[in-house]
Length: 485
Image (tube, rainbow, N blue to C red):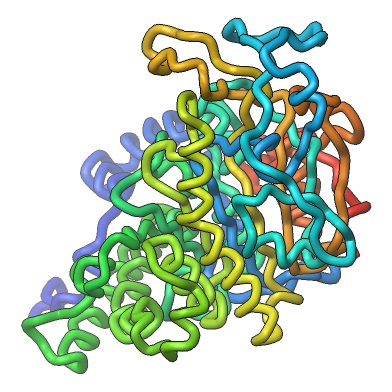
């Protein structure tokens, strides 16, 4: 064997584009490439970069956390505040008449439309709740009802992005991804962020649970809860062709090659996310089968949640929460089921019947298991609805004059568990329920409060990207301390 002969090494198979150009052009091509790459070519190992090496590892927050996990019940389409958790008797007084408010609206509104539902006081706190939520109403003493929420625009797409990602226009990481970035996940065999939406995607589709510029492995994992077969809930969950031990050996080889590839590329976060995803997919084969199988629950538990798809979603959410999944979002419908431009008296009642028992059971179940104390449950949509009837609008409604238009000026959210001061009503809309008037709470304020309950100062949970530090709340947000126990 001559001095020029050698055995092939695994490392010989990996050349970065820069190395290839450098070797072929005696280094001059590398100089040109360096100039083109600029700052990215001079990347250094920062704490943020090293964090991407295991972004799912569980971490302790810097502040004292009140909650360890989040279950976000998203009522897609915009539920009406004046028909659910914000009673307005003045609407009955002005029924069929113009409301004496000078409020700019995107579409001309009609006369006052009283709620077709009765409100009753519940619990020791005496919080008023619509008759269409009898099961949820039993838990008002564990809830803080924010009646003064407001957003930026009355359109579904930007409002969903604002509520889910903190930004209505630009691509930004979702709230679930930010939570996962800050806390990691307690179960390395399941995704730390799961989004369940039956029958397909909501408006803006996967952008609602995107990781944006955060490591890709922090993106939400979409699950279609319409499916009951685990093979359809999570596609390709089982390997039909090789034994588990053989598959592990195959994955070890692939991951070894990927790691060598990664070493040559300055810990590229996109590549690291792909490597993490391969590993997670392998580990999910056993854990996911158990987590999504509600037949393993007792008959009494299944009866508690009741029938229907959303009830099963709520039960799955509890099973995921107790297995260490950090952020779980449940959409009520893939379209905009709460978008009641017409027939609101029928539509909202039906929607509440689909979701009320499951939500009430979820709160009961979490409390019985001692999990509600450190589980933050959130309910709401992207905005609310007008207290006035919607006038016939081409392409927007059927012109029945018995529904409500979009309203971002004032709407309701409630939070329960996870450090929340139960039996609390915070803020108020005007006497008709149109605009947040007393103690307004913007979406950024809500996000700041959620992060605070999880143990973070929202101003300090940042990620360096494109030359600046980004955060979920952008440059806004104030914690609503009055709803925290």
